[in-house]
Length: 577
Image (cartoon, rainbow, N blue to C red; front, side, top):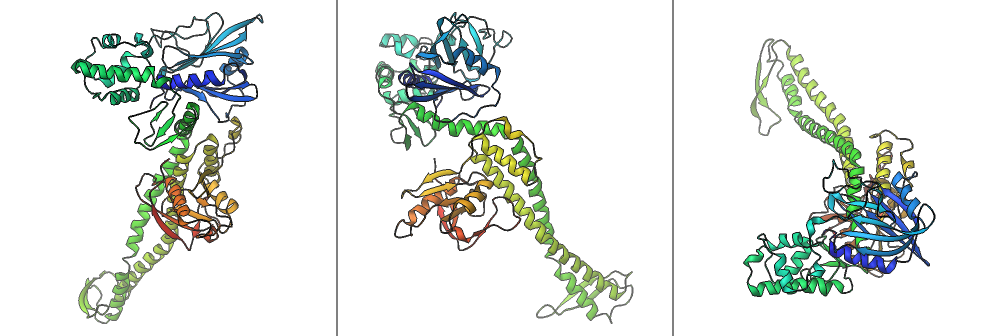
């Protein structure tokens, strides 16, 4: 679901309740288009995230500690100058649009108290975060919009701030009569599900679908094709949503299909969901997973390209070595030919090109033909076949080690790609970068990690249905740490069978299987392990498990590589989060 007018309304309602009257204590600019305000109200401290990101603009109260540059950008310094220590007077939504306006009591250049505004406009790629002074003029904005970029509206320091018109869409809360509802559809012949969010501000496809579902109307129909009774039913669903449901306490839910809602949803009543105590808590969980993953993918593009290039090379090398290895398996006929030539050397004359003889290696013996080089003596012909046999044998011996190394390299690089998918903070990416430097795939870049105050990265933490703790490594270095430093010998170690995945530890402590916990905890842990592997989208996944004491790390092996014994295998459905 998009960050629509309903989400804006409910989060603004929460902000009005929790931060109005609070003092802006600190201001961080975590990204070029993202700011976090730390707000203190009495003993309560809140963090308000304001993002003007083109693909995921949003705002909510977050529990995440900001990762900030050591040197604040110019926009951040200007933000601090005008709004640090300011007191929040009001948080309001403009016309049910996706626009948040925060009124802040600050001070003018002369030191007089005045009201300034922080305005976040959520408009897709045109999203912006704008600071406005006491005279209604723009102090600065995250994105400067000149006349060359837009002929409708410019956003530049010093200009008067103008609220975007959005083609004069209506506020759905002001449509309270059937006649007004009917009039709004005048001239609209398209499908209801498309036209509704073109007429009213802040309505998303999800909201349209919800209203149509409640009214029992096919959203693919045109409003002009509806009967009088159907129009009344559609208006009743519309009115109930915006004049009744919207004013109830929020009911934040994320559904199994990754849609979310802030109010009761009749359409999704039978869908599995995860509930939250507040709109901000839901959005914090949703965007930590979704937005951070997108941002980290962008930050790791160079690493991904490096790993994929090396993986392609290693896979081509493995394919070539497999073909060569297959050829070495065909060496036995050369040894037999040498033996048969020597056994019949008395019959062969110099210049013969073919030997016809019984092959005594067959039971019963059969006649066979062996090609001869007429320029060689019979003995030399035999030696030529023995040399071919020996060469293929030596090739096999050399390839055995080489192919093992190549396959380990392929598995290692695939594990790096899996770790990139699991990365959920910038420190994870830097850890992968450091690992690639240690293993020789990347040159060391001195001082790179000093760009930001990065938080430490930790394994993922889960809990089984029997309340046993499960930890999952997010990269190979964490996998080694988790397996050989954090886990005890009798904890359960799990890993998806024969494919890249995370090391997963079920911490049992002194508990005994069958007495203090059951196999259900192992199944739960196996489902978690399957979910953090390269085959997490499969319906059934084989997962090996054994006690940690049976897991060993070969000397000189790459990070994350282990061998294990005494394992059992479960076939489970990956856990869906």
